[in-house]
Length: 354
Image (cartoon, rainbow, N blue to C red; front, side, top):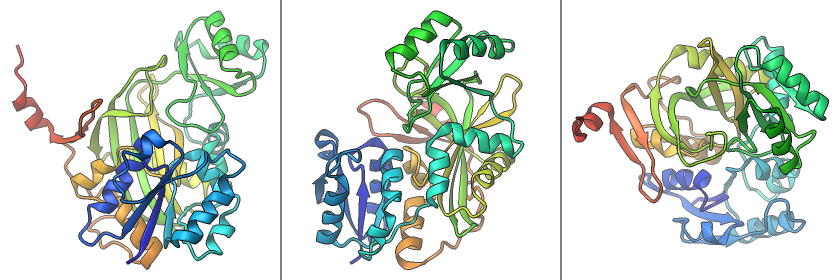
């Protein structure tokens, strides 16, 4: 039986992938590994390995030791920082006979550092919110002059690796913005950008040597949890979307990053105040947190990924783009509750509206 090692196990980013891999007709042996004991204990795999954080000096040696011990056929990563780090020693992993299905290192670098993505999108002629790096108070003053003509508030976010709208805040107050950057020790690491609308969309796709294997759109209706900016990176309500415009912008964004896409490319897009869809980032080499939504709706993308990586087996789909055709399907999430797949009609029937 083939073995699959999933890193970051127990976290929201990885649990959906693990659930998708375990819920197939003849599942491979799935092993979990991560650095957070309190997360790892919730992982559904039988074996759960505790490793150092990817920034720890012992991480590489410990990971390679685990690979030598378990000899998995395939290893998959669900966290930007960890993916970026292992990409630099990918040959050490491959030399152990463990398969990877990840993009080129340059593509990973251009995606995990959001400002680099922004420059690539802009160079390709895509509509993007203007970004200004904040190195000093003078840059901050310039951002408030330059970016507040269309909307009173400005969006601030850290450039360094991290998801969930790392360090993000929207404000129209110069002094608050300055103190926020000071608090996060973020001079030189923060970007100011035009603020966009709450409505957003995602297109997650798997590519093989420059060819699209499968891609599916999803719209996000709201975020889960609380943050200063209102953006947490955790979708509360997601919905199937087959909008051709989402597909068009997503594929153009991917091609702006790579001439030969390979692996997973998940494009996040947000509408601006004029209703124009702007790419904001690409989640590279990993699935979004709610990938189980697609599996429950009939498209198991982690299964497709491992079939290609381990067996060189490609899916037989009626359509490569948006194979899920029920746009009324929704994925609802709430703290301490199992996610729920439901249609709009059923949702409305269950509610009593006064």
